[in-house]
Length: 81
Image 1 (cartoon, rainbow, N blue to C red):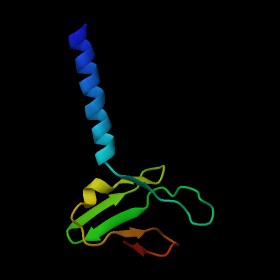
Image 2 (image 1 turned 60 degrees about the horizontal axis):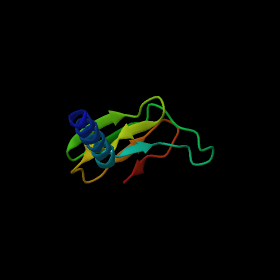
Image 3 (image 1 turned 180 degrees about the horizontal axis):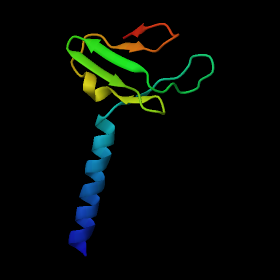
Image 4 (image 1 turned 30 degrees about the vertical axis):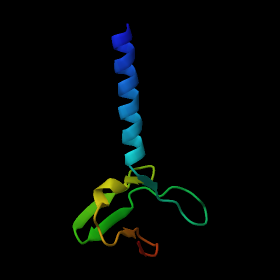
């Protein structure tokens, strides 16, 4: 029983640490505050590209080491971070 409890505790710690390390960003319209799906997020150095999911979310982990991150969506101004 103690063995299973320790495993469960260890598993919860590992899962919690993973969620602390990962950074998920949500793209919202500035005026309406609605989520924007399928936004293109990319970097030129190094070349990385990703699309936001249907909820307007994407994982920032893919952009580690990038000097600039561009967020592009039709009919919106391109943002550079």
